[in-house]
Length: 293
Image (cartoon, rainbow, N blue to C red; front, side):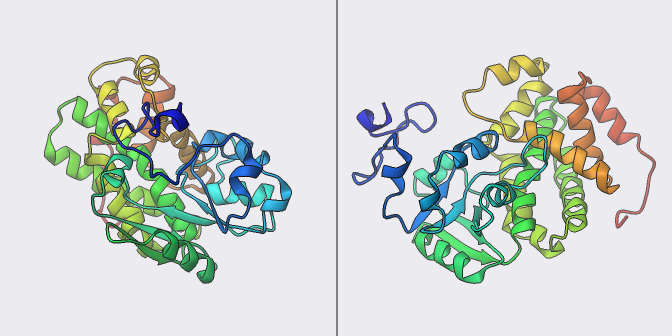
């Protein structure tokens, strides 16, 4: 259907593919002769899709990952999943505030090409950089992956707040304190603190928490309005990465002794049937403290 219609009528209707873009079913045919390959499947499928790729293509291409999330069960970042399967490959993370519909419409977008290998990061940057799509490089793939994944958890919380009509004051506080707990976990996992003040942190967080195009914020809004979690999720046609990421984030935080109260409450709403009003009460009634703490 994608090949026949020349567009993705389910996930991105109304945007025709370029004439030189074709859909193929054979992984070898897709990758033959490629200098750059991009993995852009939901996080729950990354490992299984990577296993389908023939060995001979691993070292012949630069591999970029556009998937955001943490693998459920292992808590691995997406680049770690690929390295776990292909130790010889150094993937590059391509991420940032980039809602698909706006990118497709040619609206100005800025993202990051992140890798500990500066040469590979520059190759991906050069391939994607253009008049409407600005790409910076980053040497902190851990921070970029964590920031752009964990922000989906806070976006769920922001959506819940919107659904409950808590107002702009609450939204501003939620986003700010959400950034604080994302940064705490990121630093504990050897990311650079300053990364979370950039596109992978503040940039992606603000975008995802405020836009009606955000799947995670939209799901949260339904829950905040009183729709049961299972029903709200069943009504979605696209994957809300924040749901599995919430489980992984809370587990990682507990293992490292990092406080993530917003993520904990989102976890309880999603997986323990906690009423969002009780989750709000749990956050507001926490003991007062210095903000820097």
